[in-house]
Length: 232
Image 1 (cartoon, one colour):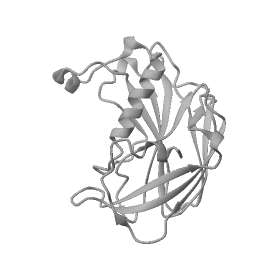
Image 2 (tube, helix red, strand yellow):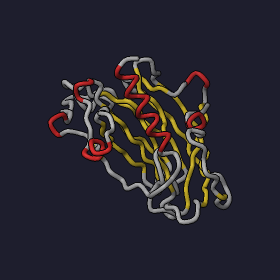
Image 3 (tube, one colour):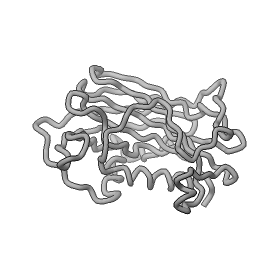
Image 4 (cartoon, helix red, strand yellow):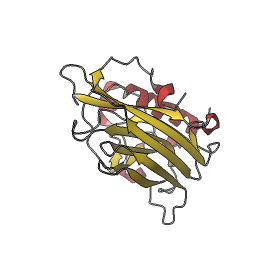
């Protein structure tokens, strides 16, 4: 298994572990993991062109976030945070996240994520996955977690389309946010898969709220919703 695939596996496992809402996420357009070294930070690509356009329509009450994950693939750039050193955890890839938002109030939207936003450099910085998060601002201060959306790879396709039906859930007692939005995706075409081309592409989305009041939350089994969010 090559370095890129190992990084993808690690990031996917992280996404699965975040599937159960535990706290309200704050919006950050750019975030670094604690183990990252400033000396290994990637340089901005002066002329990016691998553009993923995420476009479509949604219920105007919903706010959507799309989070692009970039990681190092050179083993020499694996690192540990202080907490990882103290607990004896192994070195891992360095990772950064760039997030774009589609605010509530908009029913039609188009946002751009440049997969080649960063130059690979000596650490081999590369895009790994695009996650998503969603919530209803009138009912929650932010989403409870991010969920895996589409992988990025050289065998990915240039266009895919999803229908999302978003159900409101009352969260477990004492948990934040108290109301959670979970969007289950269905691929319009079976051939769409769940991997977008590393050269960019277009992702069409139709995200609508399921009518009715919020339903009681059921604690999800670890990893149980991964196939669903990818339309499997």
